[in-house]
View 1 (cartoon, rainbow, N blue to C red):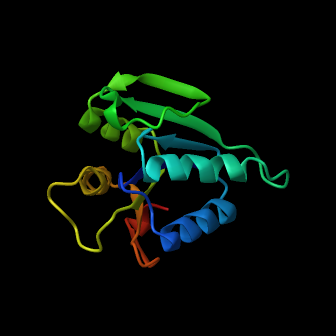
View 2: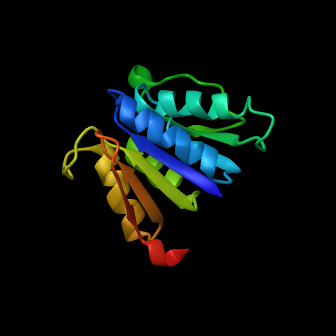
Length: 147
Protein backbone atom coordinates (compact mmCIF):
# COMPACT_ATOMS: atom_id res chain seq x y z
CA UNK A 1 0.00 0.00 0.00
CA UNK A 2 1.20 3.51 -0.85
CA UNK A 3 0.33 5.74 2.08
CA UNK A 4 0.11 9.53 2.01
CA UNK A 5 0.35 11.68 5.12
CA UNK A 6 -0.74 15.19 6.05
CA UNK A 7 -0.63 16.82 9.46
CA UNK A 8 -0.37 19.95 11.52
CA UNK A 9 2.79 22.03 11.72
CA UNK A 10 2.49 22.15 15.52
CA UNK A 11 3.01 18.39 15.75
CA UNK A 12 0.85 15.46 16.73
CA UNK A 13 -0.66 14.79 20.12
CA UNK A 14 0.62 11.74 22.00
CA UNK A 15 -2.65 9.99 21.08
CA UNK A 16 -2.16 10.64 17.37
CA UNK A 17 1.45 9.42 17.55
CA UNK A 18 0.42 6.15 19.22
CA UNK A 19 -2.53 5.47 16.93
CA UNK A 20 -0.53 6.19 13.77
CA UNK A 21 2.38 4.04 14.99
CA UNK A 22 -0.09 1.16 15.49
CA UNK A 23 -1.55 1.80 12.02
CA UNK A 24 1.95 1.54 10.50
CA UNK A 25 2.59 -1.70 12.37
CA UNK A 26 -0.72 -3.33 11.41
CA UNK A 27 -0.76 -2.56 7.69
CA UNK A 28 1.38 -3.67 4.76
CA UNK A 29 2.79 -0.34 3.70
CA UNK A 30 5.35 -0.30 0.90
CA UNK A 31 5.77 3.45 0.47
CA UNK A 32 4.93 6.70 2.22
CA UNK A 33 4.51 10.14 0.67
CA UNK A 34 5.33 12.95 3.10
CA UNK A 35 5.44 16.75 2.81
CA UNK A 36 8.72 17.46 4.69
CA UNK A 37 7.43 20.14 7.05
CA UNK A 38 8.11 20.72 10.72
CA UNK A 39 5.64 19.20 13.16
CA UNK A 40 3.55 16.21 12.16
CA UNK A 41 5.38 15.50 8.86
CA UNK A 42 8.68 15.27 10.72
CA UNK A 43 7.16 13.10 13.45
CA UNK A 44 5.54 10.78 10.89
CA UNK A 45 8.89 10.45 9.09
CA UNK A 46 10.50 9.43 12.39
CA UNK A 47 7.78 6.80 12.99
CA UNK A 48 8.45 5.34 9.54
CA UNK A 49 12.21 5.27 10.18
CA UNK A 50 11.55 3.50 13.48
CA UNK A 51 9.29 0.97 11.74
CA UNK A 52 12.03 0.36 9.18
CA UNK A 53 14.35 -0.78 11.98
CA UNK A 54 12.05 -3.74 12.72
CA UNK A 55 13.41 -6.77 10.82
CA UNK A 56 9.99 -8.48 10.96
CA UNK A 57 8.48 -5.94 8.56
CA UNK A 58 9.41 -5.17 4.96
CA UNK A 59 11.06 -1.77 4.52
CA UNK A 60 8.90 1.23 3.73
CA UNK A 61 10.23 3.47 0.96
CA UNK A 62 10.03 7.21 1.71
CA UNK A 63 9.04 9.84 -0.86
CA UNK A 64 9.60 13.46 0.11
CA UNK A 65 7.33 16.07 -1.45
CA UNK A 66 9.27 19.24 -0.77
CA UNK A 67 7.60 22.66 -0.30
CA UNK A 68 9.11 25.57 -2.20
CA UNK A 69 9.29 27.61 1.02
CA UNK A 70 12.15 26.49 3.27
CA UNK A 71 10.96 28.40 6.35
CA UNK A 72 9.01 25.42 7.74
CA UNK A 73 10.93 22.53 6.19
CA UNK A 74 12.08 19.54 8.23
CA UNK A 75 15.00 18.76 5.85
CA UNK A 76 14.70 14.98 6.22
CA UNK A 77 16.50 12.47 3.97
CA UNK A 78 14.14 10.53 1.68
CA UNK A 79 14.66 7.57 -0.62
CA UNK A 80 13.14 9.73 -3.36
CA UNK A 81 12.85 13.50 -3.17
CA UNK A 82 10.69 15.51 -5.56
CA UNK A 83 11.46 19.02 -6.76
CA UNK A 84 10.05 21.78 -4.56
CA UNK A 85 6.53 22.98 -5.30
CA UNK A 86 4.02 25.37 -3.71
CA UNK A 87 2.21 23.84 -0.74
CA UNK A 88 -1.11 23.27 -2.50
CA UNK A 89 0.49 21.58 -5.53
CA UNK A 90 2.73 19.48 -3.30
CA UNK A 91 -0.24 18.37 -1.18
CA UNK A 92 -2.17 17.36 -4.31
CA UNK A 93 0.85 15.35 -5.48
CA UNK A 94 0.92 13.48 -2.16
CA UNK A 95 -2.75 12.53 -2.51
CA UNK A 96 -2.40 11.61 -6.19
CA UNK A 97 0.57 9.32 -5.47
CA UNK A 98 -1.15 7.48 -2.61
CA UNK A 99 -3.60 4.60 -2.30
CA UNK A 100 -4.66 5.68 1.19
CA UNK A 101 -4.34 9.04 2.96
CA UNK A 102 -3.98 9.52 6.69
CA UNK A 103 -4.25 12.88 8.43
CA UNK A 104 -3.36 14.26 11.85
CA UNK A 105 -5.08 17.65 12.18
CA UNK A 106 -4.84 19.87 15.26
CA UNK A 107 -8.63 20.27 15.45
CA UNK A 108 -11.55 17.87 15.79
CA UNK A 109 -13.67 19.90 13.39
CA UNK A 110 -12.93 20.69 9.75
CA UNK A 111 -11.31 24.10 9.20
CA UNK A 112 -11.45 26.23 6.06
CA UNK A 113 -8.01 27.86 6.41
CA UNK A 114 -5.90 24.77 7.03
CA UNK A 115 -3.53 22.94 4.71
CA UNK A 116 -4.20 19.66 6.51
CA UNK A 117 -7.97 19.97 6.10
CA UNK A 118 -7.63 21.20 2.50
CA UNK A 119 -5.57 18.09 1.73
CA UNK A 120 -8.27 15.92 3.35
CA UNK A 121 -10.94 17.58 1.22
CA UNK A 122 -8.89 17.00 -1.93
CA UNK A 123 -8.34 13.35 -0.95
CA UNK A 124 -12.07 12.82 -0.47
CA UNK A 125 -12.82 14.59 -3.75
CA UNK A 126 -10.42 12.15 -5.44
CA UNK A 127 -12.32 9.30 -3.71
CA UNK A 128 -9.25 8.08 -1.85
CA UNK A 129 -9.62 6.03 1.30
CA UNK A 130 -8.92 8.68 3.96
CA UNK A 131 -8.40 8.17 7.68
CA UNK A 132 -8.38 11.18 9.97
CA UNK A 133 -6.71 10.69 13.35
CA UNK A 134 -8.11 13.34 15.68
CA UNK A 135 -6.15 14.95 18.55
CA UNK A 136 -7.87 12.75 21.17
CA UNK A 137 -6.79 9.58 19.35
CA UNK A 138 -10.15 8.75 17.83
CA UNK A 139 -10.28 8.35 14.09
CA UNK A 140 -12.76 8.39 11.26
CA UNK A 141 -12.56 6.42 8.03
CA UNK A 142 -13.92 7.79 4.75
CA UNK A 143 -14.47 6.15 1.33
CA UNK A 144 -14.39 2.64 2.79
CA UNK A 145 -16.26 1.22 -0.20
CA UNK A 146 -13.15 1.70 -2.35
CA UNK A 147 -11.35 -1.25 -0.72
